[in-house]
Length: 477
Image 1 (cartoon, rainbow, N blue to C red):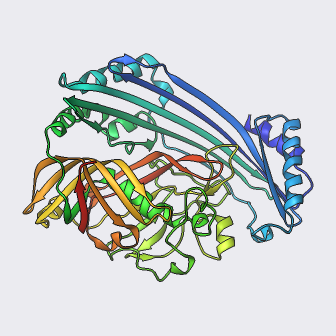
Image 2: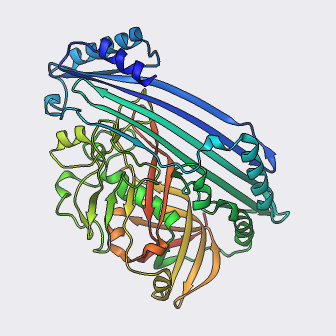
Image 3: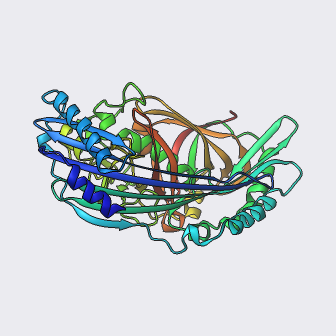
């Protein structure tokens, strides 16, 4: 089909300065068992193309699910009309955009493809995990699920570019809710964090089959636990909470289109300004953050972004110093700043915009035990369950599912409803210790929203556990 589509593109492409076509097909399948009852299997397939025309200083695009040559010609005619209307009126001189000439292939590494396991086998797996979640009559709601995503894209340009990519990912889920009297507590399988590119082997990588009894027991333990204490104290964050901290207080503030004002009337702006790059101390010298879409198992890995820029690993923060924004070629041309290959789209009917892909905190030198032993009074928090952050991505308040007190260098009793608050511009400067490779986990989130019209996209984060000093912690919510 892709060869046919390429021939149709060559035949339908108008005589303009430059043009391109981006095809995208996405298949989803979700299987779940809730309270030991098999839920309706959800399957979907969506496919179409977006065409872009640059001509005489204008630019326009149009999308269609009609992949015939006639359908492509109609879309190109609409895009060309928009290019004519926008000539001389754009915030960017489109002639400065580099040509899309890259050619290449990329595919997620898959050891055991989703389709090699028949549906009854997947249902039996989830039935077993569902049954093991209900460890006590006080477990009142429980569910185990699998979500498979298969995305294929083809980018063609009049300058000779041809990029074909296939991305496959698996997102397992599990939760148990315990209730007694007026109190209820929920414990999950890492929130939404345990997701990677690959096939069914992802279940073994995250030890999915061993998790259910622990999740059920922890939900019960939280029922009888006291609220987290309040006050300024050291805060040790597990990787499945660190990914939210990275996402909200590093990722979104560094997206270059947001810094340039594109999101201000929807998702907000950023406390970061263009003049900060190369001079601003974002965090302590222990903070090293990379943009890395080349890590093969991570959720948002790829060979090229949706504007055709080859993917490369880049430091965005090095030794605490802010180096570069998360901006693709269009935003780079607007701002005059070097960015990264992160122009991405959620669908064939959405244009690429600046998005996080894989944004990772690099491991440090401290073991988990060493971090705990260094704390006289503090709390260890796992698994995000709530978040709130202002429209400049600066002041934030986050809540977690489970906390454990650290007293005189030892992990002690479990506490419920642990929360903390801070300010992005100063929070990372209080980074006191960074966990080593043994605390490092590769995770992600499948539902980051941004853009007008809205785009919900998958993002990867990998991080060790991290210790922060003097954080404002509080309980109850």
